Image (cartoon, rainbow, N blue to C red; front, side, top):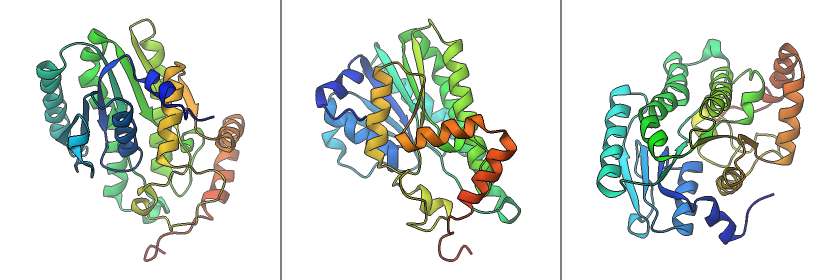
Length: 277
């Protein structure tokens, strides 16, 4: 069930003094910025991504810090710039960190671009861990929350998207473990697992538009609303959509080799983008 009531959504972010977001230039990240900006126009939002969000920043309290998550030096300098902004403009109050940046690829690993596969690991795993680690002293000192965007791909091996699925399994399990470590610290951790979402992800991954099975997808705005609802309820994990919850539960119960074989049959039906056959 989505939180459609504006006052309820506002309550979810009421206690935060600032939001730090990765990958806000498009997709789910951009929807986070737009919705939070509508709910609390005064709330400072710091975005780390390669490109600036394509929106009128004058209508938002938005700070964009350019960052290529494939470059550790840029992550360190980008987070340093955000910490300077916080010290100068928002020296107190709880912080909401949203680790959203990530991408994937579709196809057999044997035929994959190795550089792209290594990039998936770098952005989806290393960058998330590095950003969180660099910000952790501030989060623990000021209190707050961390939302990590995982995926329903995290619940089983994903042939034809092997590296991406494994990277999201890391995000899910790392988030749940971190939540336990931070219990009682004043920092809450939430893992969000969307199914296929109407963003530019598929095009970048090399998936033909319209070839993903129906009934499991949602819009970026849906994911954001579900995330804020789960954050307000202090949940540790939320899977977006009833059908996705059922599939994730089934995949978790199956022996991993069976889950991998079943996933291969489903994902193998997805068609590559033109020119990728």
